[in-house]
Length: 192
Image (cartoon, rainbow, N blue to C red; front, side):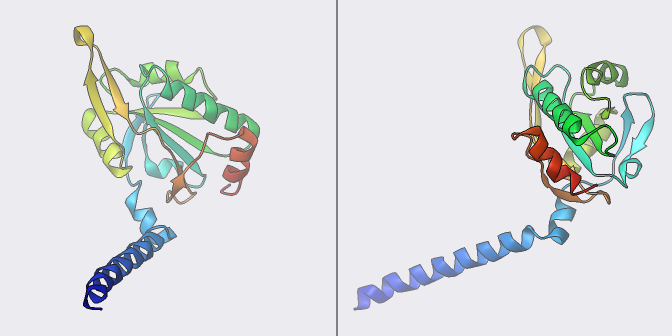
């Protein structure tokens, strides 16, 4: 009987801990706390040379994706999938799509302009100096690490999420592009 009490107390503490973690998870997924965890002010340079801030994209839902133009697979595939979603959404749908570079040393506004021209015209490439890019990376909680290659070349390991921000610039969640374009467009249409 004494052994059972020894086992009951740890089991009870574990159950209380699990319940507390579950309550914290529910609290963190509500609109309020989640909004402050991802996103925020930024000042960057658009692929057309204009200086833009996060405020320039308010009033419409915004998809935000971090990557770089020398990315061999994830970035072009993601931008193609987003282009297909935008096509399913229709040409008149007012939606922002931001492709923010993690590699401003190579991804100048001119390089980004050329790169995003291969995708839907609503996709805007954003660059800036290293400090501006790092501030955006921190605001969106993006992982980006330069990986040295041969002969001075390099790649980047980076977060491959597409962030959905609402019309007020608040974080809604990770936007699933791994489904039929019509399904993703239907979800995006809810935020128009």
